[in-house]
Image (cartoon, rainbow, N blue to C red; front, top):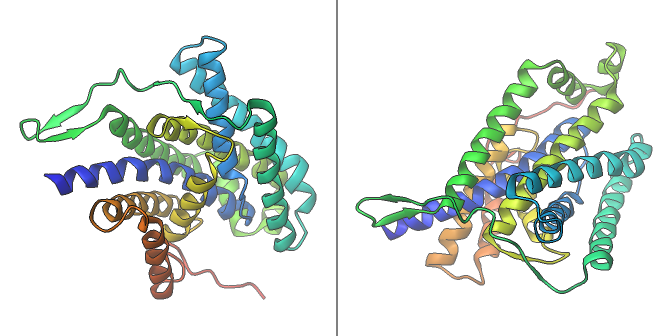
Length: 294
């Protein structure tokens, strides 16, 4: 039963990585850029939720909704101010800008909320745990919420990109921006919508992450952001199911490594597995090989 418990705990944190990775994979799949400030949007979402509960006295649901709205608007603002002017710029310029935005958000949080860690309120404490096999196996309420939210998010995103007008526009922009523009698709609005969705997902992930690890500091989103990017690459960046598979796999590998090998080496093992997967399958587990247009 012990191994099953570690497996469930791994799936729980992996579900959070998967939600963050979905934001990375959507932005990369459609805008063809790596938004390394994504992890810091998670941190902003955590702080907005914290302030809503502790200072404004709002309940869990209104606080989470406020965090989603704030991060969605932040995502649109960052895209308009920092990334839109670089649409035709080399990828290195966009990458450096993304790192700059990341440091800007971290330092802004440092100025506003200070460097001292904040204890995140227990928003998910009231959810009952699930006891299996006569109580030998326990699935916590937080784990259940993480897994359910991850599954709902992936299902909604898959339906959105395949069934809605905006989703089809996103897929067209992903395939060929020039051709999409000739067909009358507003490429700029489509990319802004992608950033908005990705940032909204970051807010949800921020709340779930801070509920699991309740200390909130300006660098809270840095390591989870890097791990989620790893998950997106692991599963196949640009693939929505790939982001989920990569996130869950990453969570399981990390938790199993901590349990059976070494807590200190768990991150190194995760990145080691990523290197092996990319050597064997460079596009990731579910990634597609794309041919360059000449």
